[in-house]
Amino acid sequence: MLQRAYPYTRMRRSRSSEWSRRLIAENTLTVNDLVWPIFLIDGEGKTEDIASMPGVQRYTIDKLIPAVEEAIKLGIPAIAPFPYTRDDLRDEKASQADDPNSLVCRMIREVKKNFGSDIGVICDVALDPYTSHGHDGLVINGEVANDQTVDVLVRQALVQAEAGCDILAPSDMMDGRIGAIREALEENGFHNTQIMSYAAKYASKFYGPFRDAIGSKGALKGGSKATYQQDPSNGDESLHEVALDLEEGADAVMVKPGMPYLDVISCVKKEFNVPVFAYQVSGEYAMLKAAIENGWLDDEVLFESLLCFKRAGTDGIFTYLAIEMAKKLSTIR
Image 1: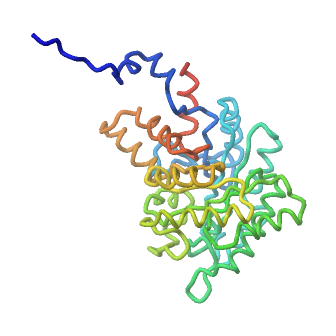
Image 2 (image 1 turned 90 degrees about the vertical axis):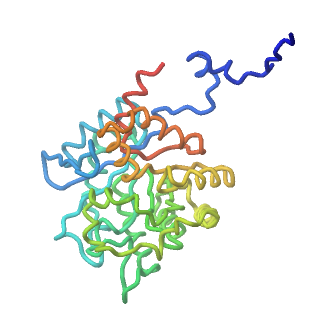
């Protein structure tokens, strides 16, 4: 009787125990990878639930301060504020965007007064929270006007830098805005203010709940952002976008959305080897949370959904799960 020849190489050996799996893990998710996006509302003493984003709230500045303190205690490196702008404050010129007393600027000053450099503040530079039409730029003769929009974005970036913002994150996708903002920062003495460019931002349907959160969904009225955000069918184009933004002075780049574009994240990291961030956007968050609440998925998928970004090559992840995951990570040995 012939003796069965067993394989010398057994891939399961190293998976046989939990300590061994940890020892050979190729990628690790830590609290240092997390950026917490937060939503702001005007007023005092209020929080508001966002129906399409279970567990996510809008905060008035005074209510936000203790939440930021918790984030610092958990070790979260940075927050990213986004304002809910009332309809009566929205207009075609996005007047609130470059107002030094805007909700975002007041929040920056308050966070820095309370916490200094204990946490970073990463600010969106775009006009959609402030326009009556919901677009990321000025609409002139029926089209989103690139160069006129860039002029406003530069002014918006400067008032945020003056308020104490650490990283400016233009998400508008206008051509040339990184170079214009970098030049303005240098001319005004903000040499250490970083720029994290949303370099590969796609015209995605995954943004729906976010537009609810900032109050711009109704303003857009079914309009498309396809003339300035990238076509979801294109991958190589993202490399061109990233190359241009890096040449213009971006310190880091963003791919948005996240999980549906892991291939883009991987390509960008391999091609440029610069700091690459991903945004686990509102639609990704909402569908995972809904599936968990309905018992269709185990909540362990939340950890898995973030770990995949690290495997793809990200250096950091914008996620509404930041507080929840930071608490869970603190219990992991």
